[in-house]
Amino acid sequence: MSGQHVRLTAVYLTDLLEGSSLNDPRCPKKYLDPDWTGSRGNAPHDVSLDAFDKALYARPDDPKLTQFSIDVSGKFVWQAGRKPHGTLMFEKIWSFKRLHGDWKKMQ
Image 1 (cartoon, one colour):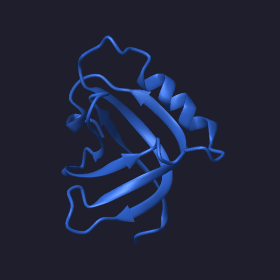
Image 2: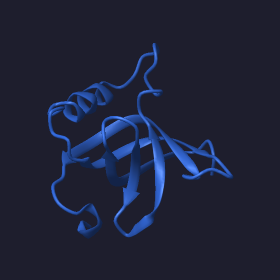
Image 3: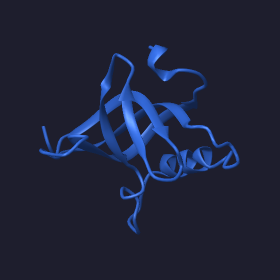
Image 4: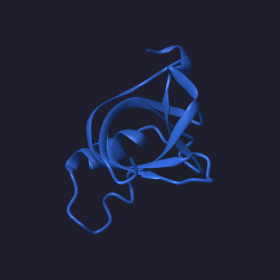
């Protein structure tokens, strides 16, 4: 499946400093490494990535974990021997919504 373009709905978690992950509340122990900054670079990119960037940093003074429900499409890259085992290179964010509370209880 590596190299395939996929679309998924997941929970995006980040501390805005060191780490971020894509999580599925139905499988809380499995996650993907999101790469939405590398998807942009200097090449043309979908404006939805810029909108998500603004939403992420809209409240930088909030020290809590930032979490969003996100519907995203991109290129999946398998990484055997690493945790997480895969990266999703974001190409388009169809929708997102800031979440509050325990993401593991959200369906």
